[in-house]
Image (cartoon, rainbow, N blue to C red):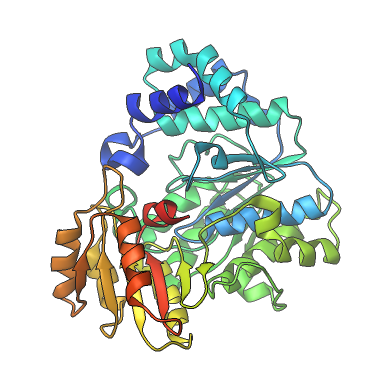
Amino acid sequence: MNYLQTLDWLFAQLPMYQQQGAIAYKKDLTNTILLANHLSNPEKKIKTIHVAGTNGKGSSSSMIASVLQEAGYKVGLYTSPHLKDFRERIKINGIEISEEFVVDFVAINKPFFEKNDLSFFEMTVGLAFDYFVKEKIDVAVIEVGMGGRLDSTNIITPLVSVITNIGFDHTQFLGNTMEAIAFEKAGIIKPNIPVVIGEYTNQTKDVFLAKARECKTNIYFASDLVIDDYQSDLLGDYQIHNKKTVVQTIEVLKQHFIISEENIKKGLLNVVKNTGLLGRWQQIHSNPKVICDTAHNSHGLRVVLNQIQKEKFDNLFFVLGVVNDKDLDSILPLFPKKANYYFCKPNVMRGLDAHILQQKSNEYGLFGKVCNSVSEAYQQALQESSENDFIYIGGSTFVVAEIL
């Protein structure tokens, strides 16, 4: 198979949560451990940093990688989901894994994958670890896919575990209370491995402290410890919390790596250049100003929507699309009524029909038109806006992916 055929096989033949939802969720790590053994346990041959959290884990992972790159290390970065190309998920010093490596890895291991009915995510995690070992990296930053305790990445013993924050998302898998979700995320905390917590609440702090005590490990609450604010090329207001989390994580990592203050400053200023991170308060057009952002739950959208209100504009436009398991009652009340909406369906199996989104939005006083695609919605918003207006594109990672 060539690269595109290999991707088709990966996406189509096996369940993948991002496309299909509940059917792709695995209840334990049996398959991942099986695959790791098959690959001669690459996860035990690399130094890692493990990053979980409801929001901000992608940005935080990329910031940590950027700082370590500025310090001169060869840094692997594993994130999900991708926006444009599968290879975005696996990078070394900002360079994506080669098409050839992906093709060869699948070709060599396909009989094993099929025999054991491995999921898309399990195979991708195995691919990342195998690649990082073969490329002789110094350290890898590993972002959790979903949750933590049962996530395929949770076979590593990292130098430090990081939990950015807790919010309501994927509640059908992780639980519908803050404590239950925190328990799942806290599943990445390991015995005697320090853990850094970004944001916390009274409900979640007790869960983290209990797990840290159980694991006899040091716990650091970054929001209480980090005072300095650093400039960054990531301009979303929510990055204030992520930067604190990253700075505290780097402080812990100084036991293992030589990292200067200048490395931290440059790393945080050059995240996009060093890692290729996309879709975080990313401006893609001027006059009118157009911002796209992958925020997709109430915890993330609340901050983004507050930031929009700080912008200067005459009229406000939203290109909005979501997936069909989104809790609309938790996010739609956050959106401003005084705006023009272009409802669209992201082009994935889980995309919510735009007419249903429009109907539900109307209940919250949000009015606009239904468009046939994300790109059509964006083009209409551009045509019907003026140079002093503001256009926001979001609601789902997949909406942003179709625009970039």
